[in-house]
Figure 1 (tube, one colour):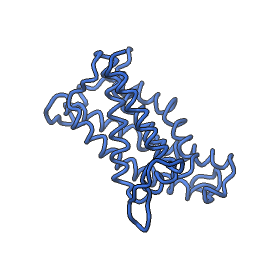
Figure 2 (cartoon, helix red, strand yellow):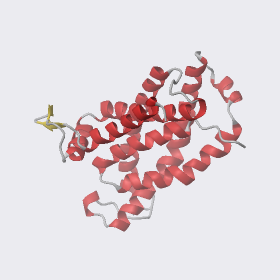
Figure 3 (cartoon, helix red, strand yellow):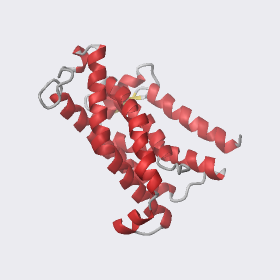
Figure 4 (cartoon, helix red, strand yellow):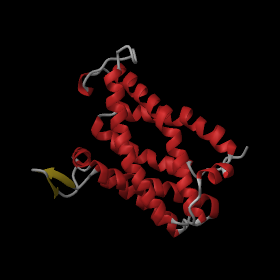
Length: 232
């Protein structure tokens, strides 16, 4: 292993440690330093709730960009990733989009549980649900999130990445002509069924304050998967 590989491992460990022992808290509507604490996850959830879009930007940008760097390291042997800063910004904007989409689908699907629109489970506050009800709710939310949102989100992100890598603005027709049909017609669709629906089922089974943390770590996998070019 190279020194840069150890630095990458330390980066990931530091990210996880900061989230687990988060040293900031909300007091009277203000962000205050508390020092690293065993209540870090609770404080992390409170800060995320207070600043959902800012936190969404950084938690996804920091890990999803790292996911892309991991793939570049595996492909080229170097961590140097072209257009890294622009990719960081794009991932941050998608992190803000994820913040809205997660809340919208959780509340929307949650409200429809047990109705004629979606006659499964029961619409209840999270703390009143049994484990079985949480699994039904989590799966239902994950299913609709991924069926409606996941594929167009991944495709649009790949378009942004293509523009960054080619260092020019690419029109929709030109982009679609150059995409790998095997990747987007088969591989990415399979990842939705095999990976993303189960992964987000677990996410939506967690208490709301912990979903943002889980989605941040899943964004690392997303950054990695979106750079894979599988063999036919």
